Amino acid sequence: MNGRTTDIAIAGGGLAGGLIALALRRARPDLRVLVVEGGATLGGNHRWSWFASDLGPEGTQLLDYFRLTRWDGYGVRFPEYERRLATPYRSLSSADFDAGLRRLLPEDAIRCDERVASLDARGIDLAGGERIEARAVMDCRGAEGAPALTGGWQVFMGRRLRTTSPHGVEAPMIMDAAVNQHGAYRFVYVLPLGADELFVEDTYYADSPMLDRSALSTRIDRYCAAHGWEGEPLDHETGVLPVITGGDFAAFQAAHRTPGVVVAGARGGFVHPLTSYTLPFAVATALAIARDADLPGVVLAETMEERARDHWRLTAFYRRLGRMLFGAGNPEERYKVFERFYRLPAPLIERFYAARSTRLDRARVLCGKPPVPVMGAVRALTSPGASLSMRAA
Ligand SMILES: Cc1cc2nc3c(=O)[nH]c(=O)nc-3n(C[C@H](O)[C@H](O)[C@H](O)COP(=O)(O)OP(=O)(O)OC[C@H]3O[C@@H](n4cnc5c(N)ncnc54)[C@H](O)[C@@H]3O)c2cc1C
Image (cartoon, rainbow, N blue to C red; front, side):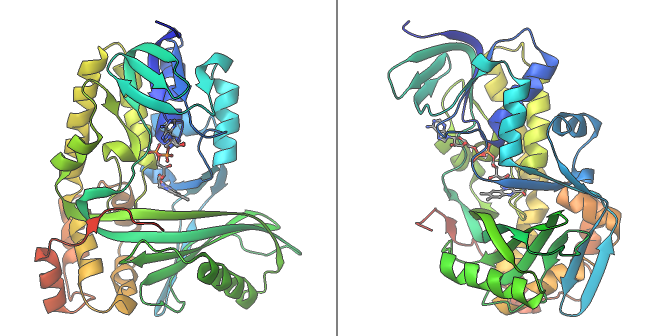
């Protein structure tokens, strides 16, 4: 052995890997944990947001260790409907994620700027040749497309800007779909991060993973101008996330499996199929791993695979809705699916985002006149959909 030994080695210090390390630190400070991250910081360049109702008390407590931005409610806007909801909303920047983990984990628990070349049930090999032996190994290196799965894409660009005068926006606007749809389901997402700081994101539920940076940037300019927000851009983020409507989950798992290694985060399939969000599931997985931290790595790996299969089974309803969204009718009318959904009771909407819809919720979402043409919807529900292989964005 030419390297160090640890109890738990985590490959990838993004959302899932970082939360697992934190949950282990809180529950089991006796264990040695090492996070190996290829980037210069933990968490990359992201902003993660979620509804407070996505998390239970333990998950809320875990995220409360970070510096969060909090709001008491949010709004949505569609061409024919507008609503303000009282569900609390939260947001965490990757800079605060990185700062929080560096404060909360021992210094020797984090190694950034180190690429994992390979891993196995007993350790990690770094690109520089060093071997790290571990009792349990976790693969949290994110997902690189999912050719075994089918669906469409959520494509977006977000801009943080400092406004020249107070912008006056009080609550997040989670979906402003009363905008030109440009051949997709398009909406603008706005977070007031401070009196003179805004985050404005232009998002598309599109058939292709193509991200046209210059077009999206121009549309953000126009949206800001239309609302009278002038100011300096501070930074940008972009995303091309799969919206999963079907496929072969066993093949997805096989493509990401290393025998005896725990696979977590997006790579493990812990994703909301329709919103592409992973945060609530990353929190729940981190807490579960911390509870089972004494299990041998190979057993933990099997337990987490089983957990991912359960997640896939329990989220079938959202894939079905996704098939309706992508497969039925004219893309310019996709917004009607959400416009209709947002007229439903707030607790149902909360359970939907947390992927905990009840049988009755599902019936309520699907009952009544479909917002998209009936024949298209029927065709969509039976169509296999396009493969989610990641092409250059
Ligand atoms: C811009 C953006 C915004 C998003 N916003 C939200 C949101 O608001 N709410 C939400 O729930 N979800 C959001 N998502 C979706 C999802 O939650 C995130 O993609 C989330 O970060 C996935 O977590 P993860 O840990 O699986 O992967 P990642 O966070 O991508 O982490 C994987 C990490 O592994 C590292 N890595 C990869 N290969 C190696 C290697 N060989 N060696 C070492 N390190 C390696 C990467 O550098 C990366 O840091 C967003 C995604 C994007 C892209």
